[in-house]
Amino acid sequence: MKKRIIIFLSVVLLIISMLCIVYVVYSSNVEMKIDTNDKNIVSDLIDKYNNDEIVGVLEIPDVLKTVVVKHSDNDYYLTHNVKRKKSELGAVFMDYRVNPNDKKVLIYGHNSTRGNKLPFVELDKYVNKSFYDKHKVIYLYTKDGKMTFDIFSAYVEVSDFDYVNIDDYNGLTYLEHINKLKNKSNYDTGITLNKDSKIIILQTCNVESGYDGSMKNTLVMGVLR
Image (cartoon, rainbow, N blue to C red; front, side):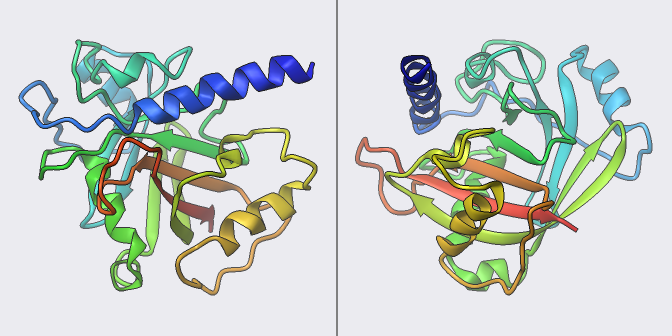
């Protein structure tokens, strides 16, 4: 069993490292106009892009707004956009192991060294509290409605990747695990977590600190209000 877990985590970390590939073109990216006032937003986007793997829309007001997709693995949308067309820029996608209503939702997206039209480029700005102070809320729109998350942690991870764990928290309880993630934050948000807290984790490669080939992942985490 331990060997299987190690192999699985190795695959997950490989996928995480692939998100750190830095692209310098954006001509193949899909421009998306999303009306978050649309009550049937997910169904309408599925029809618009002819993709039944669209599971939601992620929004941080005045920061980003993007479609979220989910495949049967975490590889496909590294190299395909929401129209399922080959694209170096990929898409913003949900971890295949989770669903939008799970207690821990992980969402991934590529970053870039240039001002490309990639939604998660903006996440690097959360290393500074001054940016967080102006953008504290994450919205996730799904077929079941709108969820509001208050950001409780933001930091750059370079070595400890157990935030991707879903059921096994290396001997910690779920509450101990999420409090560990909270305590790693670059700043205190004043938010208290409990054993029933539902959280969302947004991950992209960190390029603000300089890209040197190592895994440096910007993480922005929110708790369901």
